Image 1 (tube, rainbow, N blue to C red):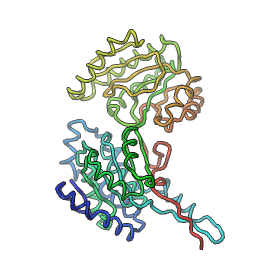
Image 2 (image 1 turned 180 degrees about the vertical axis):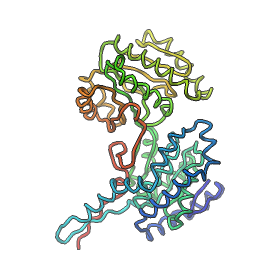
Image 3 (image 1 turned 135 degrees about the vertical axis):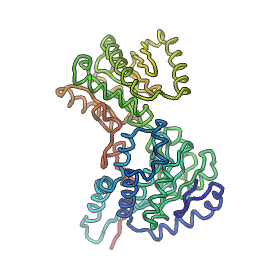
Image 4 (image 1 turned 90 degrees about the vertical axis):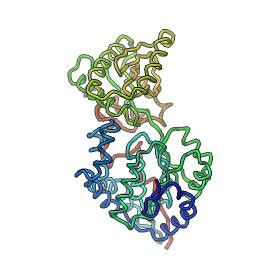
Length: 428
């Protein structure tokens, strides 16, 4: 499905839209206004409609098949309700624009302007992410072209179309195209007409885009990140810490470990493998218990994980790993301290990482670090926060809140709306 100039069109109209797109973008830039207030209000109206069930015919089937939970839907709605979106804009851009434009310099002034045309290449691992990426681009005043992910379920197109129906004057700020990444001719044309390419994806996706993007086009990457929990050994015996382990297990089951802020595994503040193994076994027991409250993964996913775990068991003696395996969950205890992606889908690792080695071990992963769910006593927390920050981590939360984000917080250590703008220096 294509969304162009406020109208939904079939994919068969792609050639016609491509012929008209550049001129439409130029007109949009020439007539560009500060539309943040309109975007915020329109998005808020759509959020209210979701709350009262206007789109239940589309959302309920996705809820029933486990694509996301009610709690996750509520959290997403909060992201673009009017108050939270206004707060996000004020923190990320509104105050910044005022500071820049109110600087007093004799004979000179500065203004904050949108980059121009943003080409969004969104990932499909989070429901509504393509929509939210475009929403951010609109808040900053840009003309936005969105390439839908291959597995998109239509939510992003629906929400963007609804926003345009609420505020038709925003139609020139959004174009959605359902074009495969393998169509390099179209991808290059879209890249060439853009001032910035917003990429949600891993290293390979970013490399592929750099290969066909022109040197003068800015690439704004929100690459795949790795997140983990860091725990002190007393989690085994401390009641409060064990409660946090339960919350961490719920986080793993609800996010299925497919998000950048999903926990892939647990690092333990110890180099004693007996201690690390004990933590791994305890967390396995908790994860196995919590997993019973959730819908099982699809049979294809379970089958793929079973084969992978079988291979792990065959190689466990040479790799020095111990595997705790149950119905739909597993915990692999390893002796190395390497940060890596887990098998996901309720399967994680547990590894040693004494606090004295945090910076040395994690610093090489600085470009891929994101969230740490920290479980420790108050006395050690400050020292651990300092070490994790120095290593390159950009978010430190309680273990159960790793995937919980609030309006106005930075993304991967940066404010997106500021990245989608530029400062123009003007001599009077």
